[in-house]
Image (tube, rainbow, N blue to C red; front, side, top):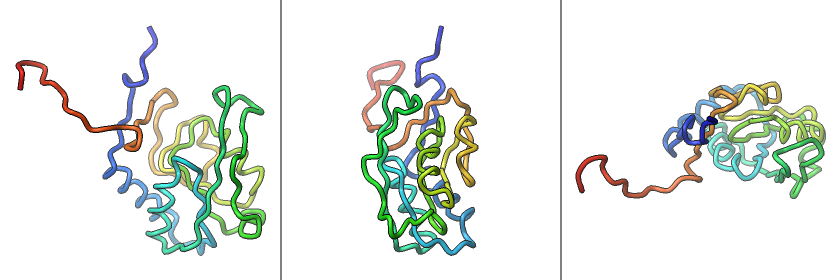
Length: 161
């Protein structure tokens, strides 16, 4: 029987994401980045934290929609960053929350080959697409990000309360 996504889950709290994004910033320190480009939507929060930590004031976004579980040719760029800012990507830091298959970052790398790619979390299949990451998780791990979760009351295993 196959596992359900929550059975091999990695739950990330807001606090943990903040610590991990700061750790990513520390690993990226020492380079004079011209700008940060957040891969929407998941890269928005880590990109903001990295930009704050590294005192980078120029931030842009790229939005890519995937179709058919990211099969080849199944990606559509919905929003591009400013072409004058980007050039070939030299001095640009592209930040996302997670690299999974690597297809999204592969497409962005084709557009901006000299950019530096960084993610907070990386799965083995997509890891070759990033130069910097904080935590590696197995390919079959489902990451539950804080923006996907809601706090709610949970009944105790025994008793009423």
